[in-house]
View 1 (tube, helix red, strand yellow):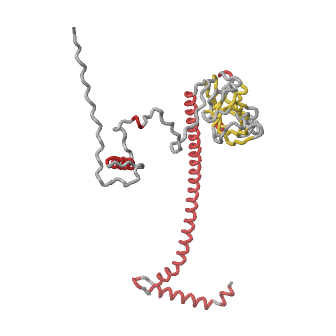
View 2 (view 1 turned 60 degrees about the horizontal axis):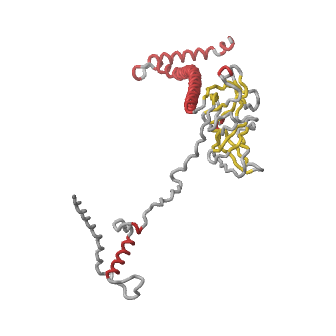
Length: 365
């Protein structure tokens, strides 16, 4: 290092003197607006560096501020997600409560309308089978429930009690294998037996091929099984076809279509009526009854009541009077026809009724 300085010592001293002289000149010389030239050079030299430093500082500060803001946004987003989840849960809970209230209202209305004595119960569990067709309700023998009682909802029958425990009861659904109930069709009053096969649809057996059953027709309980009172809805016909020896009818139980949460247990059954089928709408053709037999005949009508309803009848009557006035008999005289340009004679007015003479006075002795 010392060798290098000794070698270029003169040049280094010269450069230092030149730089010092330039600095002195820049200090003494003034640029526009009383600014020294040295200051102008210093500002010009420092400005790019200051700009770079400021850009780096702004970028770093913006990065950290954006990072902090992003953390706040993430925290706020998480809080909003949690709030939305709570609101959805509360909304689902309120919907469930509303559905339960509507079902309870429907059960209360049905209980007030049905003549049978029923007891409301809630489903508390199902059996452990894969395709479970048995449920448990929270009413037992201490509430008066006995084996063989009917279970229903306003939409239709549900099943029957197969076992009554002190605080709960086991209910066999209408779709369970081994279930049976007497049914009758609404429109044609065809009787049969509803049986469960473990599926969602139930066949109706013991219906002859000659019996008329239509798809979509309603079936109601007939009361023949001595379990279900007569007149309770069972379901609608899904398929109908003729089979070997009997008609094959498949029924869709109406009481098990939307799931069951609350049911009614028939404690004392009272038979009702099977409702009549709905009447046809007004746009369909209806056959009117025949007219009565006591319609007055034409010969018994008075001349005043014999009105000529149409223009053809009035024209025929005019021609007849013209022919009568000219002595022409239509159909009998093939000669010259009457002159229809002549005025039509006026129709004779009916004679006024003669007043009745008073009876002669009685002669008193």
